[in-house]
Picture 1: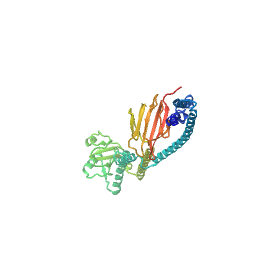
Picture 2: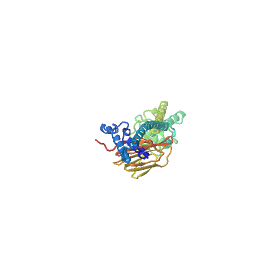
Picture 3: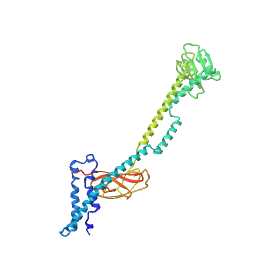
Picture 4: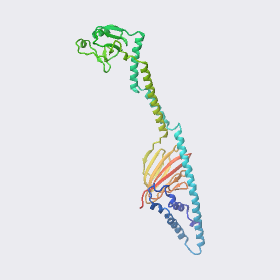
Length: 392
């Protein structure tokens, strides 16, 4: 008979949540003032006394049942001592789960399987970059210029280049029109010392290169065109470079130039590889981006990689969609003047603020952040809370 008048497990849990145990580890950083913190050290006594008074009223205090009431109070005190031991066990379990989370994050960061989609995209982008005709356009232009110089040098060395002696530039144009094949490296020596000599730099062109002056027979004959040394000219599909002497050695590729270009090319390639390595390292340590959803529904199906902002709640029920080893989610809400009802799957283990024995008991006027995660096959929920209403 006396059992029905005992303090219930739910009343004990509510008393604990009105005690200093429900405070954050560092109340000051959570925005609590000294006056608010002090309240937690005596408010639970009044709360627990009220609960006891309710039971005493139910029993009806008489001299005949005094011993029975005294036994009930002794039983309640024993339950409180047992709860103290459970609190220490819960703190040990919380530390153990926290260590496991750190180990799993470390394993994720060092895994070669992480972010495979991003790694594959980098490989595709790098391959496209290497095959693109626009990549390293400055180096390509330098290589083309050197190849032209190399071809001129080879023509001279192999005897393919010819020396053409001309009285003036008009005679040079006649020579080009009637000499048959003109090769890169052919030299046109002009007898008039006031005029430059010319070296054939390119042949079989469809149009004048940028920056080249087009030679015209009539314009030269009438003196409209002034010929200068060190300029590029174009005539009949041929690019000519006016020289300071009978042989423009500046147009010939030198071994030192080739080595310098090769060194610059490989230096740029090494820089690109280093930068890609740094990008990959950064991707290996980055956090996955969460989708953020707002909802007013009372029943929420929580999906991985999603953060839910649920606003003010008087009741809330959460469940899970598909759960895999990488499941992570966040649920945010706040409470008002009335403590809300809260339901969650039984396999979800809660720890942190306003949690006891693996369950979560939200109280009034608080903002809650619940971080959900699959840790070694166990679904855990770490609760963080702060007071929404600050009492002076």
